[in-house]
Amino acid sequence: MEAGGLALSVVALCTAFSSCMACFEYIELGRNCGSDFNKCVLQLDVARLRLSRWAVSIGLDKAIRDKTPVSAPDEEIEAALGLMGQIQYSFRMADLFSQKFKRSSSAAALATYDTPHDLSVDFQNLHKTVRELAVKRQAESSIIRKAKCIV
Figure 1 (cartoon, rainbow, N blue to C red):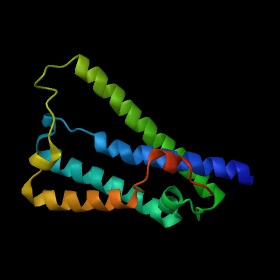
Figure 2: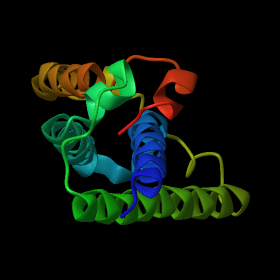
Figure 3: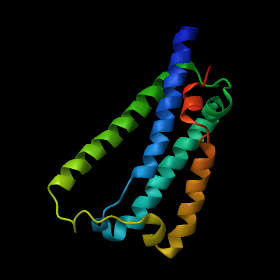
Figure 4: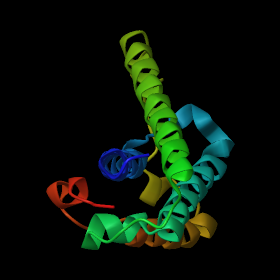
């Protein structure tokens, strides 16, 4: 891949990564999750943490925050772009399904959990710790700065 193409791919990857990480903040779990609520929250936490660990392993977090090079081979960047696109697509499809469900459901069926308050006490500290790790790994920069990451 040419240097210009790689730079564009890395910018796209930075943007896609930031978008995917942000989506985790907007997930709401319905009250009909019942006893699976704790498990679902922790599965989402682990997925987010794994994504943030991967970003750190290739230097994507530093590329977003400090404009430093990414240390991944071109093939991995291209594969990651495809995976980020799939994650974004999955979030979009979930949102579309949610909108469709909202139009056809009663208020009771639309009730959602408030994670910080409804999560069982045993899981609250774990959720908080894992979430803080993922947020810390995600560069706490403005979206403009995130979009300017370079190779």
